[in-house]
Length: 114
Image (tube, rainbow, N blue to C red; front, side, top):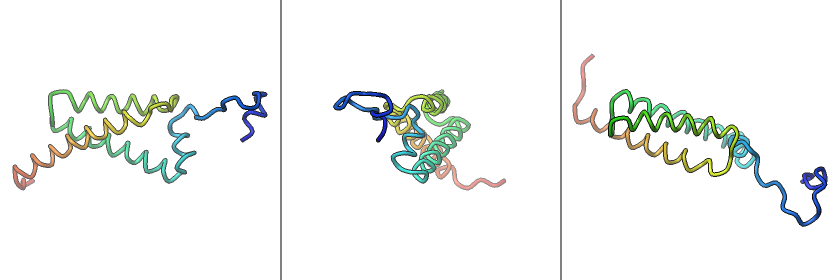
């Protein structure tokens, strides 16, 4: 609200529309609850990709590459908020698909005794 006045921008010029941190942007738009849900989504996606990597799901190296990309996107989101959502949803979707493959493989093999 006070950005233009504080920076001395002339009236009618375009104001600052985005913070340069995806997590702050999410917190500002959706509140702390929305930010926590998003972080839970990231953690869940990482766990699914880790399990898929451990169980060798999908094409060789896909789970490891997707997990590494997710970590890189999460770190990059600390300094960038432009277009941050696309890699997160794509990599989470890859993780969910690979995780579903692991679950389907487990259900086909039947119960295992420990």
